[in-house]
Image (cartoon, rainbow, N blue to C red; front, side, top):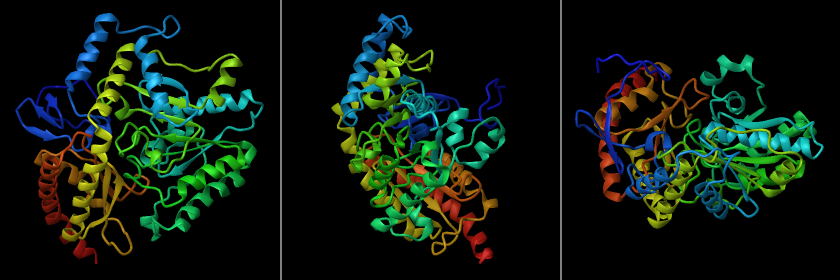
Length: 449
């Protein structure tokens, strides 16, 4: 690509120009086909260019594309809110629409704070989160994030919040299925609440199934229930960041549904709108929202909140998920893909862990499986393997495992419409990329021993 671009995002690197995307496939202008093996950034849950979603958007465009929430109610936003309330735990009846995940998290912590002030608990302002974690790029969401390259430059500009370790049992040599492991990590939350002073702690936020920062991390046995009980004990609100795990990707509408644990507030986005329009939501329990509204209203808002075109798209996405039994397919195909990824551990000694639920899956590379020592940082495996896969025509998503500074994990999260034959395609491309990667990494591993 030689033409000058006036766009910039994270880096100045260039990619081919996208020409078309359908189902799980994407084509550039030169005709090369790619498998969207990460659903973009775990967004395109139902695949690309669904005819029925596009038709629903066309119908709404002919009526209106914008109606400001202070001037009009809109049918799509009301219908989508009703649908969401039916899909979430009992009592989670209030829905606040936003345009993305960072906005959803910001909205969640702000409704939590305003609720505390409203009920006479203004001393509560601290939101405990985990390390590593990622909750968004705005300053409020970034204060909850623990991922050094993203947070360090901006720390002087924000109120950094308390952190506890994420329950990464596989790195700590603990058994995921042992209830004692879940109790061990949950106890860290209670200890942090007591250290900070319960009267100052507003909320605890975490991802039920990990996103980019922890690579599809699944909590250990008993953890989710113990965290809920601890929050209840100290009057701390529980916020589930379902921005990535929500929308059916794990095989349930919400990641937390696997454990039957209901939070007080939910943030959701990404696959919720599935890439058809910028869309997210903050969903809260009636007992939190009602006092705030009665006291004068929620002092927060976004221009595109409840945009009728975005909500029409979101409603059509949810209808497609249900009509196509996509959550059931995500569970079944996810089990198949996870087993195929797990089998790679026999072939590649540098794959140290495979984890996830449904089609939110990841594998992690290490130098030594016994110690879980990461590969040498200078190998830049997290970017190298992504590039090799891209050359094969497979898109995967990577992050540094250890707080953004070292370690390498890769998310393999194709759309929820993926079938067994397409899993085969993914594995052929991934194996080819791993073979090429092995040629580079194995000599370096032998030299470091």
